[in-house]
Length: 276
Image 1 (cartoon, rainbow, N blue to C red):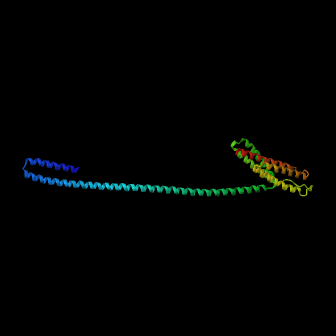
Image 2: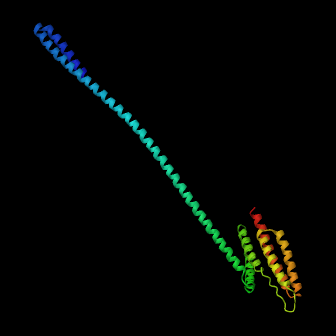
């Protein structure tokens, strides 16, 4: 814009000189115009040089701007790549952490399982020791179990339907404990009877058949239970017969024992229906 103004000024001077030349002394005015023309040319040359310098400066700045834009583009690519690598590294670290936690939880679960197995083994040992209590405590515990069973039967009618399975399981445990009290036969050898060892042999068979019935009841095997139950009743009658009617209570014990076993079988059958 400055250059155009200068050019306009030069043209104005030339025009003015021309007009002046027409009305003044030719030589004097011609020299004056010549001098002014040189000055105008010099100014024009300076203006052109300044304009070219300005153009070069703008071109240089434009090149620098383009270079900066290119550098900025590359920088953004590098930043995006580093951000992607950082995300992938974070995801991998998270996966490794989760895997380590999962393995730790699995190990802890295995320890807990082993602990539960140990507890169950101790409970089984405790039950075994309970079954080995003497006959006198058996009678007392049997009465207590009967009272608990009676109380359970009262509660059973009041329980809601969703609690029936739990109550059935409690009854199975109670009846199983009652059955365990019959492992040792209560038969005696009368002093006036010479049985030649038959009663002791029958008492041994009594224990075998009682244990077989208990195992069958716990498994819900009614056929095996009834099979050994008949054999147990035969032993009870034989004990009474060999002792000449002095072990009648053995028949009652066998009958009560089998009644408890049938309760377990019935409860097991009901549980299997409730939980197919």
